[in-house]
Amino acid sequence: MPPPAAPAQPIGVFDSGVGGLSVLRALRARLPAETFIYVADSGHAPYGDQSPEFVEARAAAVSRFLMAHNAKAMVIACNTASVLVAASLRRLHPLPIVAMEPAIKPAAMVTKSKVMLVLATTSTVRSESVARLCRAHGDDVRIILQACPGLADQVELAEFSSTATRELLRQYILPGVAQGADTIVLGCTHYAFLAREIAETAGPAVFIVEPSDAIAEQLARVLLTLAPASSLSQAATTFYTSGSTALLSSFLTAINEPFEQVFELPADSA
Ligand code: DGL
Image (cartoon, rainbow, N blue to C red; front, top):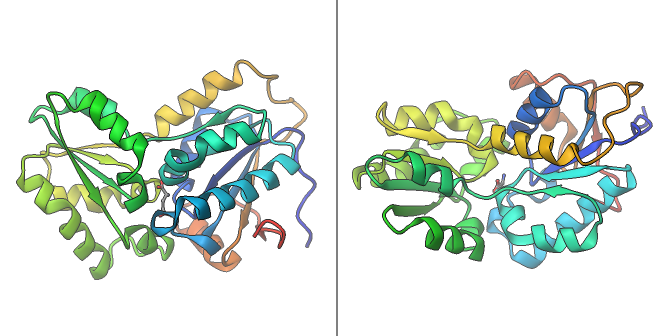
């Protein structure tokens, strides 16, 4: 069956893969009248181990696809793509683009031990954006930046609590907790699907900061400046992937995300 005709003015949401579905869930809950197009670039995940040039080329291709579907706004539901290429995407496209960054600022306000642990991809941890956040909020707080290679891949496989995933979590979390971290920032959207396992690994005294609701609020504010969703349009989400449609379908089923069908990202965008 061919992809359905695009709804009038959807909101485009993309990530390197399934991680951004954690953000989409919050967007749909906050903005139930809106229609969304979600692109999982799983054929090219993880972005976190790729060069900035590669991520920029992928984000440009995916965002052009969303523009061709008449998107009225875009959400980069990926910290890695946001910190690396949000500025260049904003130069490319004349529409509101909501981007993410690790929630270091809110975490600095809640930590009591004054030690926080930021879990993110290698590219995010090394980015200038994160260095800037650390300079701005690291005066009286110790910020431990922990790159987590392999962790997003486990989420792509829907391996939320396998032995391998739990071993990676111990390796990435326990040293920071041992140094006194009482707050953990989920600096990669994939990790939201591991929130329970992260909490179990870190222990009950550790608070987890996850930014999806804040991103949904930000998008709601941005939409106030645009035309409201047409009452004729049907609130719904269309899913595309550059990876396996079967894998994305089974992931959506596993997380109870309603969907009718997953479409292949067309070859010129994939
Ligand atoms: N979900 C992406 C993020 O928020 C990263 C996963 C990846 O490495 O592709 O950073």
